[in-house]
Image (cartoon, rainbow, N blue to C red):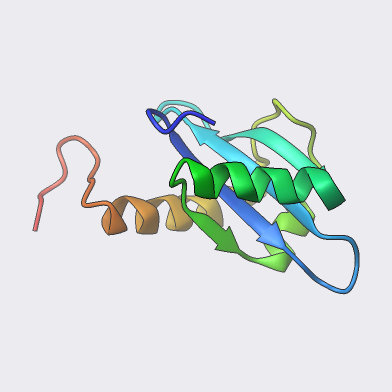
Length: 104
């Protein structure tokens, strides 16, 4: 994972196998699944995100829906709103704002 791009990881550690996904967002297209995994792969996704100081957001329902997609696919349109809210929150935490956005 490269911190120079906009990336985040989403995880779920429910009673079933742990799952995680990582998203890449270039600010132009819809976010893309850069990694999808269960068990040890999920743990590695989360560990790599933390190692590179990439925010990790826990949401079992969202990771369940996103993990149905394949690595390299764009997120489905029905998840645009929820993922946009997460990205906006991460931007806010990092003090980043979209171009032409009135900075508070």
